[in-house]
Length: 89
Length: 130
Image (cartoon, rainbow over all chains, first blue to last red; front, side, top):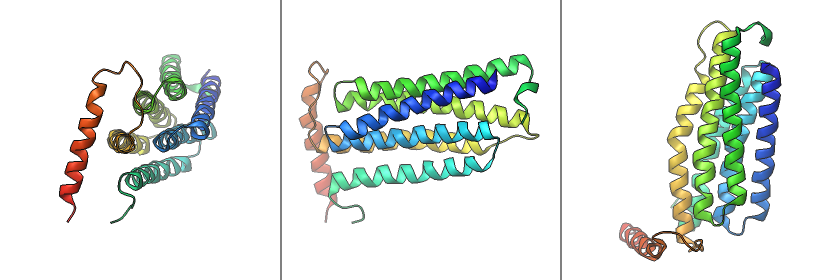
């Protein structure tokens, strides 16, 4: 049962990633695109964790942690650039 | 990991957690596509997707702890970090959107305060500059 559920949830997360991509390409304003990128990395973490469960490999959790750290930093850097016109003043 | 040797109640609990997480992630993405303006769109991923991701990570933590001997705390680290950083990044995005004077959807309550918030923010920013 659990492997079927894992496959279903993987499919759900993939659909979510496609919807995020649509917003990333469509997004009328720059903050919309930043929001789509932010959601994209959150959903990528979900996808990687689920894939790690499916493959039973512990290495994927380190990758998810790295993506979480770098995604947060990149979101803050992009917002800072929009707000101040510069990232490190 | 042999997925078929878990007790039934544990399997049901894990399936419920994973399905709930996937459902909330999907709801967040649908909200990102469907909602009318940026400030409403900000709610969907930063709340629903974070909750969904928390449920998925919790399910993953329980599954790895049960199937391997010993408690697995990697996921707890990711969950903690995400729950700290999600409001911060949402706040930064909202400030950037206010700075860009994005349109708000008609019918937004207290929408007339957008200009006031912007003015106060600019005042604070200019007082911080040398």
